[in-house]
Image (cartoon, rainbow, N blue to C red; front, side, top):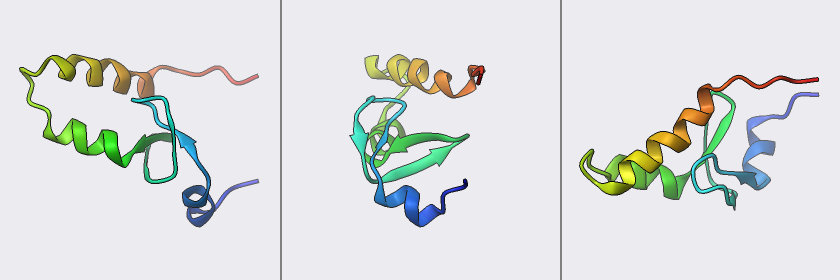
Amino acid sequence: MRTSIADRNQREHVCIVCEQEKKEGIFLFSHFLCLDCNRAIVQTNTDDPNYSFYVRQLRKMFTSKIHS
């Protein structure tokens, strides 16, 4: 059963970066990114120590999942 966008926004989802449950955010490649992390990523410079953390967390979107 498919869920609508309205249904997705009303439930809490686990953010791929901070791994916390949040209600507001966006979906990228079927992964949830909360608004707080989205803002932090956009405002982080490449020389910031947190930049590598964000890159590592976002790489999880591209790892394949085996569904059984």
